[in-house]
Image 1 (cartoon, helix red, strand yellow):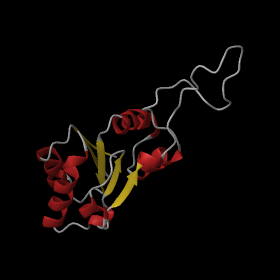
Image 2 (cartoon, helix red, strand yellow):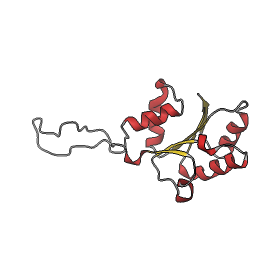
Image 3 (cartoon, one colour):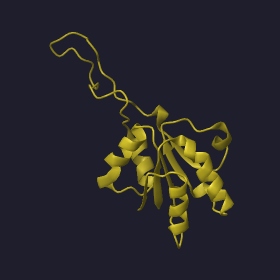
Image 4 (cartoon, helix red, strand yellow):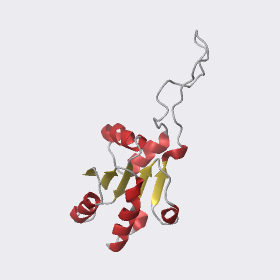
Amino acid sequence: MVVGIFPDASALKAVVDGLLASGADTERLRVLTIDEIPTELAATDVQYVWIGDVERAMDPGGLGSGGTGIPGMSNRAPDQVHGDEMLEGLSELGVPDGRTDEYARAVEQGKLIVGYPALSDPAPLRQMFSSLGATSIEEF
């Protein structure tokens, strides 16, 4: 799987268009983001994992003292994404266990992660991701 991290979801249309132009099957493209998918792309065969519905950490706030917080709540930052859907999405991209935190942080920061199964020669796919603004490209 060739996996690219893009600064934001605005690169998604260009990635889909590039794959279509090369004759690639867009059903094999995997996308992980917290941004909403543009309407014109939502109807395509691309497999999206939109993390917008995943449980986000919450701060119980000032509910008194002496252990009167809400069970199960934490004081993690509210922009952190938690939940199995994130890990499942990273697993589908082939991201190894030791690297999931790095990729989860990228998603939490609003970056777009796309993955496409490596072809016999992944160089053109890597080049396309690079030319479209990927800040990181790896093969898993």
